[in-house]
Structures are given as C-alpha cells and as structure tokens.
Image 1 (cartoon, rainbow, N blue to C red):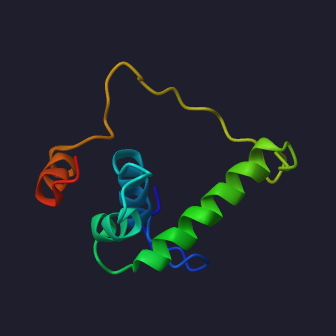
Image 2: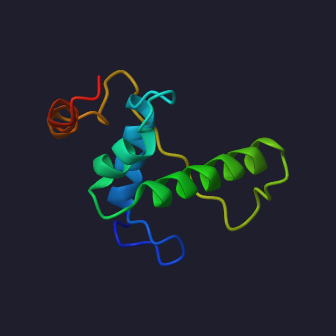
Image 3: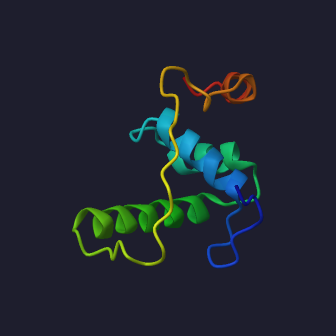
Length: 104
C-alpha cells in the first residue's frame, strides 16, 4: 500500500489511519473533540484541519451512498480475500496512544 503523502489532500496514509482511529474512539459529544483528534493525528494538524477533513469525509460518504459514484473508473482488479476472524487494525501502539491521551 502506498504510504506516501497524498498531494491532493495534504494528509499522509498514516495521518488518515490515525484520524480514522481517533474518530472511532473520541465521543462526538466531547467538548474538545477536534483538539483531541488533532493531537491523536500527530500534532501537525490543527483542530480546524481535522474538522474540515471530517466534513470532506462526510461529503464523500454521502456521494458514495447516493449511488452517483462511477464504479467503472478503471480496469477491474481481482478481489483479495481477507481473514476477518482476527483484528489486525488495533495495535499496542494504538492502545498506548489512548492511554497517554486519557480520552476514555
């Protein structure tokens, strides 16, 4: 998987993964949600940056769910099978980050 920075969005693969993790664990009613998410992303993004990124994500999801996405953008790629019986997404580093931020 390409882990180079995304020139169009200004977010690297790692930042996007940390962003997704942060959204999953920081309550949307948390009074400082965007500041906490920004800290979890690595501190290079501001609260405003992560909030804008979230709004773009919501817009993308709405577009995809509307059925307007052209699924024939390129050649079809063979599907790969994924073992969903065990999690490979949550690591000790993820857990340590949560412990350090004490957001639970």
